[in-house]
Length: 170
Image (cartoon, rainbow, N blue to C red):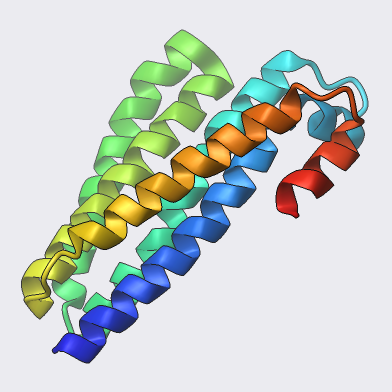
């Protein structure tokens, strides 16, 4: 009961803070990261990379709720959620790739991963009958706001991008 809920919320908060930190770094420094990794990369590559990295937050949180549902032997429910996600992703890709190419595929991924993770979380809360700790999610939102503000402050410095990442990570 209560111990499982506490473990889930602690795990989700840890993954949230780690994934948000990684996503902020990779999104704010996408241009130099892509130039460093790939010769000839342009801003379109960086835009696609940014969009794909946004899906990492949902992917990270899906591990917590998927594991909880697996432990509660709710695999048939999870399979229905995943099949719905595949169908939504296929439809979105058909629409978005024609309109926005690789960036559209990345957007379809963000939408699908986020929707799937939300469905897993709501299903886990219902199946396990956990209380939703709104105060924990408010703290997670405050972490996001603080980290975003800290990143914006650091990005305005004249330091190299390597040093800015080091300063952000503390």
